[in-house]
Length: 171
Image (cartoon, rainbow, N blue to C red; front, side, top):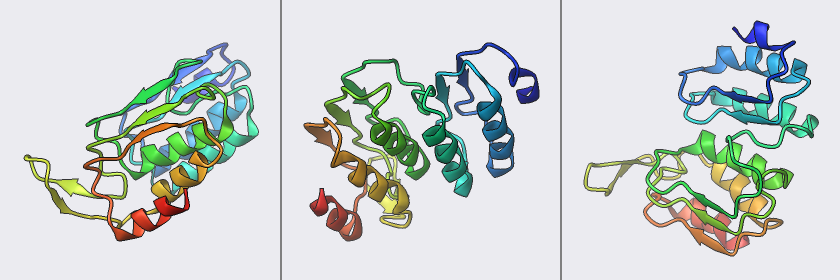
């Protein structure tokens, strides 16, 4: 399927929640590189593993691609509260924030009740385990916040532990 879209005039590609894993990343990266008209991609909720870094690299090289998270151009608020986002989604979000393209004017970032560092939760919302086990995403997010327009940040009930809070202090 992705081979067929390489020469298409598609401007938007959503592969959110397709289960695409590390093996699918190579195909997606090749397709995005070849798509002359693409301006928006949504790759959220996929187990991309280390392949997320390859996706971010092609995003950084292809300036016409405005978002990896499917954001609408010019939004002011990202409301991801209780949306099952994890470290991979946070890496994609951080890339979007750093690039200052579709979401350059975002000033509000609501991320509460997501396991941003790998934390998992019981049904009542209490942390089960995994606190600070996957730090790449949160570190990248905090670094991207330094140059963003974010003035409101909600990280409540995200299962952030001492290591992630130490990085937040640098923000």
